[in-house]
Amino acid sequence: MATVERLGPGAYRVEHEGQQSIVYVAGPAGDLWAFAGGQVYRERAHHGPPKGGHYFVAAPMPATVVKVLVAPGQAVRRGDTLIVVEAMKMELPIRAPGDATVKAINCREGELVQPDRTLLELE
Image 1 (cartoon, rainbow, N blue to C red):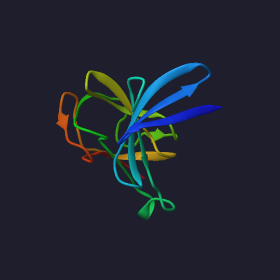
Image 2 (image 1 turned 60 degrees about the vertical axis):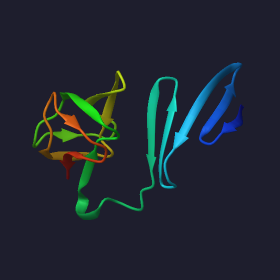
Image 3 (image 1 turned 180 degrees about the vertical axis):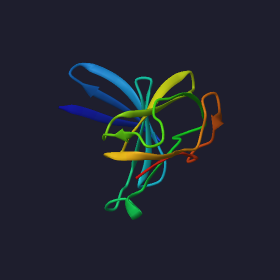
Image 4 (image 1 turned 90 degrees about the vertical axis):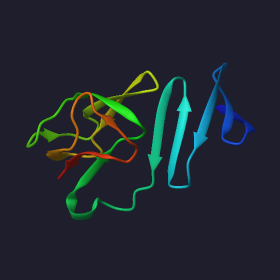
């Protein structure tokens, strides 16, 4: 069982199995970001399947595209790594939100992208 102590606005101390860590949480309801243990997590509220069967995969924060691991027409499965970006000296894998086919790639390796910029489209 974990215990959580609020330290201040958006900052929490979490103790689990004798280990303590600080977790920072930011963002509005339905689009929360958490920073813990050198990792960045994002939780967005989803209401049903994507419109028109399309997924738009976006950059989670300002980042540099390090690797594009897919090509248009390629089939991907939920959880497959599609793109790797680097932000704050950390590499972050961008994963497929569901089983799909890559429709379009809207970025290139080495490109600086801004938050919520559509990196690729899946259908």
